[in-house]
Length: 116
Image 1 (spheres, rainbow, N blue to C red):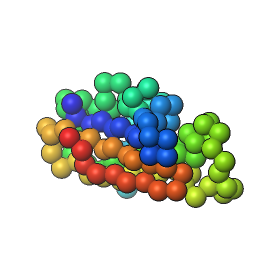
Image 2: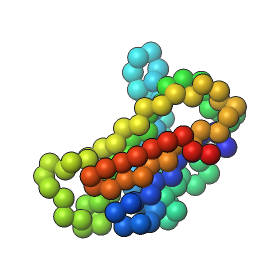
Image 3: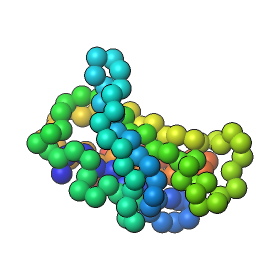
Image 4: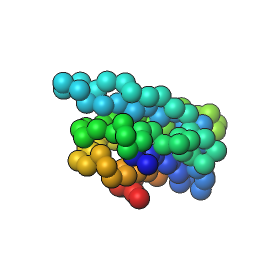
């Protein structure tokens, strides 16, 4: 499967359908844009982000547009928002393995882990 993500909206107890997610790769000390997505009804990118044939060893960043997602749901958020963007920087040591990077998020907190 390569690289995948899944976002759960813990405030509302459902997948974060419609959240924007951007994938970057660290190249020569700078993060370069690889992909931009909007999560599907299951809070995922259909088919994953990168398959094993194209995943490379290295450093990556996933950026989740948290404030925009909750604003679209008409959640009353303070200005400025406590969480606007969530950046998850992670490394891929073995590109033959599956790297799943889930995000559990509310307007005030988030958690992640290396999933399966």
